[in-house]
Length: 99
Image 1 (cartoon, rainbow, N blue to C red):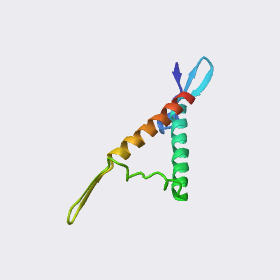
Image 2: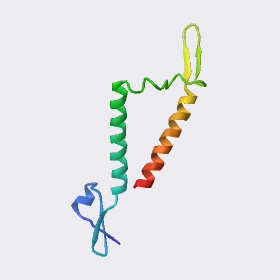
Image 3: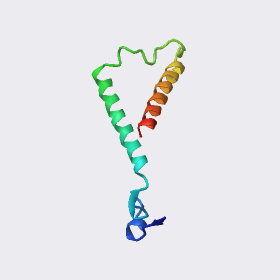
């Protein structure tokens, strides 16, 4: 496998790999992942602004820790973190199978 070199490679451009006459981009998989994640975050932000997440009480689930003192408040949403972690893992498993 040979890599192209020259001015573009010295400037930090994405290196294109040449193998048996085929030209393929080395970082194409990462680019798809980043674009997909960006589109997902934009969609979630739009839904958040529209108020469609008011149904789910994220941050107020049973198991979230909240300690209120006289001058301070400590809040650790452990159950919310676990739920979001499970949802995120499921989304990434689906994306992994699609791409």
